[in-house]
Length: 194
Image (cartoon, rainbow, N blue to C red):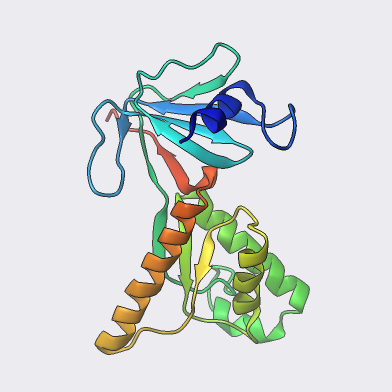
């Protein structure tokens, strides 16, 4: 991260003015998707975006708010490659979808995305849609990030070719999120002491 942006994040200053929301999340353990980072991590966040990741020993200015999770583990957001966002998770959910109004479908999709995010999922691949509602939501996310898990191209995987396409789409979505990292892209998972 460049020094100016890091200094701005740590003091709460930004291009948006001095009222930016900046804080840091610290944990003694950090998994980066390939392995555990030596020294844990301090994740620097500005206006809902990750602007840097330093070791857990990184010294923050006193005015920077710190959320310290001690012996917890932080990790990048998870990817769920098989979801049906238009279903409400109840019994026979997909059978009810044809009777939903556009507002009801929007509420169900938003609720599903919020539940995914609450479990650490930041990217989803939807495999069932109704009148392209999820496709339209995905396209809108590319214009304005709504802070909810990103939706990658839909379609049901069939044999090997679809699995390869799904992997490619998921990698593309992850790379996009890495280029525009989000605070919701890191999950805070408490280490079990049991």
